[in-house]
Image 1 (tube, rainbow, N blue to C red):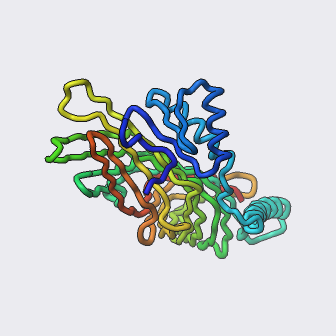
Image 2: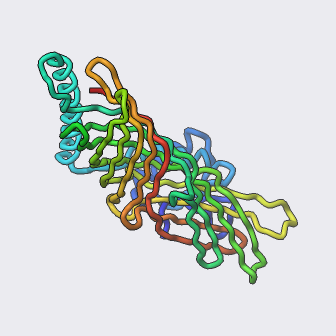
Length: 334
């Protein structure tokens, strides 16, 4: 089973094969190759492209699929409902902030809506469970090591009492991985180790958080929060590499690939946060600095590695959880 519509030619590793299901897509791909001067051979809806022109052909392949890709949420009603709900949440926050400011002298209570703009640095803290995932299958040994990532988002909180808030929002998360792929085969005399330096993957998260705080003086609070979220990815991630061994080498030239995709339509992460907060005022924003941790209930993603060279092609697959930890900074608006 292949996850992409291109692969190394099984009989001649100097070529990549691109295959299409629809004649129209194949014709459009051929036209783009001709315009760009990319050499190719065609057989029905399959194309053979020299390895030396693989990147150009891959770019045209991605552009073609981007033009014909279906929306992540195909149902228009659901898509517009999500947009309306998001717009309504932002509108409520803005109206709440304006109302609080306009009636600041008349309203004795400080309760109401608060808007938080957040930025996070996701760090590979092994002590917090954010470390590499390794697996071995059919002589293929792979290690996925998380690197520093980033996330940005917006929170809308409703202060129920002086010390309690309930909130939600939307967050964009960027994950980065370094991948080591080792393969050994005593029969063929193969023993290789290759590294893919970076695979990028993005996802979105909708948190539902409850937070409490204790005042420590001068408008500062110690806060702690917990909750659950809904995490979903708009697309799978893929990266490949190639090692060209010199003539006479004991090891073969080889291709290797890495895939990361969601196991289901979404996952449910359990989240915890602790930090220091400077409470916002009507005419002055506050800020929050803290740490966070989250881990999905069960597996959230599948990972897949392929090694191809020297007359052998092997694949290894496993599932991993969504685990994040790091430092967070928020700008708080009232």
